[in-house]
Image (cartoon, rainbow, N blue to C red; front, side, top):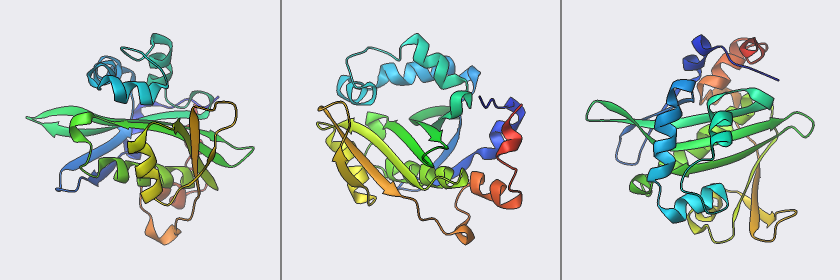
Length: 206
């Protein structure tokens, strides 16, 4: 199990940009985010929430919320994408990813607030996740989504992901991609820290 020291989390934050130039901060979820994260899921449209949770739910199940806010447990990590609106940090997207060292792969899932879809945030967040995956030494990144989730399928297709059947559930399709990130690009904080020291990622462990 890998746990994270809260005083270390913010050094892994990244600043992205929406299509219109809004500053989007991607950072690890912290326990203090529990209420805001739950409110985010409640604010999603029924369709978006169904697509993200792969079933009908009015909110994030309490057990899942606990997993979301404890970053690093069982090599699973959660991030939120936030924008400052009227001086307040507002969650406009989220993602959760898990690293499997045996297969050198990262599995991911993400969502974007319905009101902010179409602003390039999903594209930027997905690219950031690819970099975070590379910092672990992952060679492949993939996710499973409902075949009816046209927005996620379109996003993955535009980002160069290939599609195949998802094992075990006919409702799902799997999108996957080999990770090819040039080290000299240093496109995210996780990669920068790993580049400084090969043990940088292991320093997250308590």
